[in-house]
Image 1 (cartoon, helix red, strand yellow):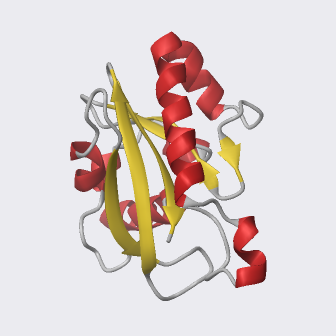
Image 2 (cartoon, helix red, strand yellow; image 1 turned 45 degrees about the vertical axis):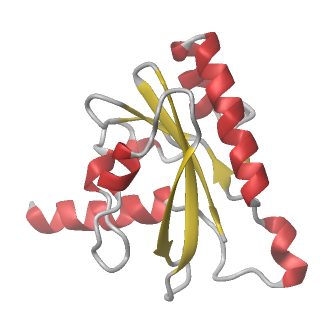
Length: 157
């Protein structure tokens, strides 16, 4: 049970931290989202949540809902329980964001859980390999909070 939980946490972190090949080349940079695009997406998520939480979370979970672009996507969790409510990987729904770890085992989920503030965009920086890569690279996730939901969008620097 303990080893399956550890494997699930590593897989969860890899999925949360985004898909994409190891390190973009200048020609391939357009394949990946930028800081400005990630921030714009999380601000769009914030505005959508203010219109209605249930409809917003449904849109975030829908592939065609307008909240996925290349390696950028919205994920959300409940501010009380820490349980994922929105994520492209449906297996993560209902799991606790606070259990996430960086590649080296450093706690990541606690930072993501603590960062969102009502009415502001906050950021969490960390290092994590791109899926398919071995070396950790800088990544930043922008986070917002609206009522009982905290949502984020991350990009590789």
